[in-house]
Amino acid sequence: MQKIVNTPTPPPGKLGKGELYAIALGQVIGVGVITLVGPMIGLTGYSVWLAYAIAVVLGFISLLPYVFITSSLRFGAGPYSLVASTLDYRISGMLALAFIPTTLGMAAMGLSFGVYTNSLIPAIDSRVAGSALIMIFVIINSFGVNMMAKIQKVCSWLLISALVLFSIAGFFQINNPLFDVMADNFMANGNTSFVRTISIFMYSTIGYSLTMTYGKFAKNAKRDIPWAYIATAISLLILYTSVAITAAGVLPLADVAGKPMTAVARAILPAPLFVYFIVAGPMIALVTTINASIAYYQIPFKQACIDGWLPKSWNITNKHGASIPMLILVSLSGVLPQLFNFSIVEITSNLQLMTSCMSFIYFAAFFKFPKKFASAWQRSHMHVTDGLYYFLTFIALCIQFFIFYNSIKTAKLSMVIISMIAMLVCMSYGFFRAKSPQVQIQTSVWED
Image 1 (tube, rainbow, N blue to C red):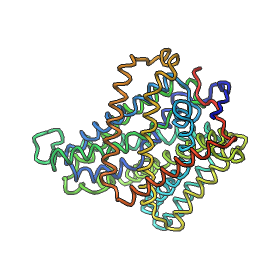
Image 2: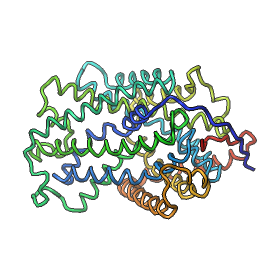
Image 3: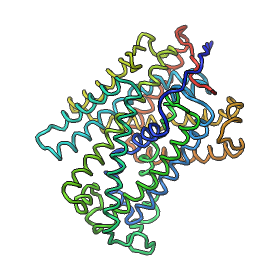
Image 4: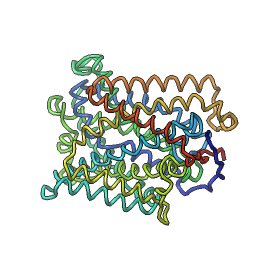
């Protein structure tokens, strides 16, 4: 039998609009924007900028349910809290176990940072640089969410400055007919490749969904978190489209197709500004994603320990509220795979597919939300009719199916099998652990 323990609404946190915006933007803008554009130019030609713009818009539509629910409720542990409070509580046990192996993604981000560092300073081993970065941000996050947010704010503005620098420098050097839909290479490989480009780009446009996780730490969660979603979507539309225009518009198509954006940056920027772009662009993009990810991992982990899905003895925090066991886990997950040359690509590919599957659980909660929290929904400052809400959520679900279909279509059979087995293990754990008297679901969703 489920046991619910009501907890009082926590006092407002310290994160304002600026911090939440920086967290959201830094989380979503990763090195993908630097590495994806060149290959996608090869796939679809000059229309790459249009594909990115459509991907951003579709990505935002797919996240509209997050905007609506965060305008109504304050979430203590993000999607975990939503599922625990809306669906069968045993499913939250499944999530509690499933998100732990996602920390292995830290190794891929650290290794990418190391590659860029090695390209600038060949004497530095990429694995050492990547591992050192993970440890630096583990230490920063040990001082709590507020410290993380301060660092994130500075880094996000550096990241924005690098992308703006690249875009503006390129605007004055555009030579190609990017906006001529009749040009031979506008859709170089036809409509099918254009649609495929959109689907691939969408992975780099939806990472800010996890902003809802910081409800407990926000000054005015129900106002500021929805604002952060909308502001981030607008920023992505401007930044990503501008970057793609410059990437495809300056050099001949053959010189940029299939190549990283750094080739264009080297051509349009003086040496000092090129170095600034590399540091403040792809390297800081990884930094902001790593910083926000370490903070995110801790929040549902602590709630899962409180609720009893994981041993309560693991809920050990320091005086800043940072989770010591999770910081240790992140350190090991981020460093050991690099040092021992594990197949990071295979690991993260499997995790991405499993994460994509988990998103459908969130949609089940989205559809139940208006009835489950009717009073909060009615009082939301972004309230719409239930019919419109369900329609928009259905459209968002269709877009999620589109993303999932394209990911599974290109996935290896072994990857699909491993992901399905992992999900079955997590489901079994949730239903088995639910029998324990240690499981008591603490309230982590608040209307006030």
